[in-house]
Image 1 (cartoon, rainbow, N blue to C red):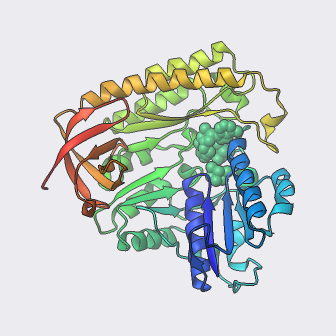
Image 2 (image 1 turned 45 degrees about the horizontal axis):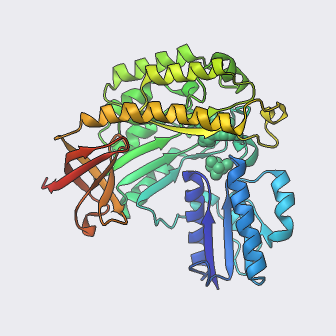
Length: 411
Ligand code: SAH
Ligand code: SF4
Ligand code: F3S
């Protein structure tokens, strides 16, 4: 039998799909294109309604067009959506119970979920070091869909990183909803130090970091460990103290700014990205202005800006929405413009410089593309053979969106 996987959501979900795929292969199932597949596995994300809507439409379409395809639904799901989708799916299963999924074409195994070695097919090697979340930010589904926080033992993680590096992965992503609170025998900072000792030529990135748990030991590890990239995603969510409180984010704007100043003192050239939600219930023009102010002051290198989406089961679902879709879009635009203008200024500083780039693929126009240590996009001409290796690129052009290089200079 043949199967096809459709994955929504974050890198942790991608990693879950790699485990599903590996487990299916072991049971003599073959991965295929959607059209040829007998089994379609949907790995869902519930963070925003739009993702669930897109998936629901796709499931219904498949069920209409080809009635005999087996549809399996897994991933992050809310009770209400499970109820709605029950009639369209043949099986709805929990991803962490994969070894004991009760399916006629799978043999159950008495092993732990994390013992399944992921089938790595992305250029990045994803390593989930924990699951779940204990923070209950008032807008967020993760504590409901993924349960409470649990950290894997450090030695298992080290082994898995070694395995990914051995497979040739040059970019290792250490994943968890709040990696700073990792507690698998050693601290997160010490885990980074241990990973840095692994032999090989690779970069390490990690996400996500909760500001309340970011310790200076982590900043010191970033500074001292050569393989840990000087890139940090530190979600702010809002620059207004009242909104932060309503979001159940236990820090205020001033504490966040101080934290960033301290991190920059330890690692001056760190690239900083953030997550923002615009249009949270009750977010007035005044509240939003405080986020804009933070945006100007902190000078982020990158930001993932999301329009608030009310989610069942979460605390803020009960709050009446006060910001229209149009206004959410406008607020998103305002922040994006500040970001891109600042980026143009920063990107100009790269002109004529030589930067180290991890080559990740080739675009439709035949240019190679990759990322710098600080996660900036770079494109340049070159041979496909360079994919998945490091290259030194001389930057000749820049735009709001990224950098362009002309030739690869031999190392
Ligand atoms: N654990 C991470 C983020 C997980 S979700 C953290 O603590 O930051 C990724 C991002 O999705 C969040 O940072 C937030 O910006 C966004 N998000 C989460 N719930 C959302 C919602 N209900 N509406 C809009 N964006 C949301
Ligand atoms: Fe969601 Fe907050 Fe946990 Fe992040 S820290 S996963 S935003 S509840
Ligand atoms: Fe990730 Fe979405 Fe689940 S962001 S943890 S797949 S709800």
